[in-house]
Length: 189
Image (tube, rainbow, N blue to C red):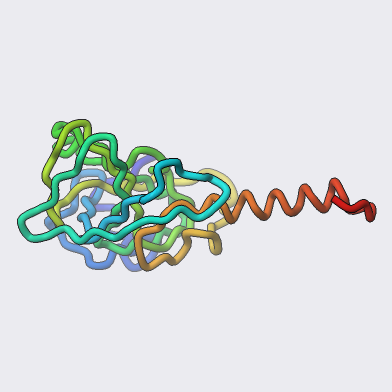
């Protein structure tokens, strides 16, 4: 089941937190989130999953910023959200998609208990001018069946900025565990 807009508003301060909240952004079954004025762009030609990748920060000026095709931009929502006992999901708005802009390439599925700003993986099919503060995506909420185990700690929990990929942390921890399994009997690697 997906919550209606009125149910989203009813659950504010309980299962749902959206800061700041504005009634004008509430839809029949979702809530529109706005684009912050900063973006991150990776500087590496080849991105490496097993290490941090260099990036630079771009500020969207008042006159807007043109997103170029074949370049991924990481942005974030202006709104900070908290979710309890529900599964938050994020999707781009159809009006944005009709301009050939993908707002959330993947990972629109949030965890029960997620608290933070949403990082947006943005890609333009053709050059498109974007502006800070525009309602670019929408959050909606699914109910959960069964026992709930909330996401309380993790690489992206309670973030305060755009989050580049932190997959390297996961992979290095996994590699270290595997090394200990492989060589834990005293053999030298």
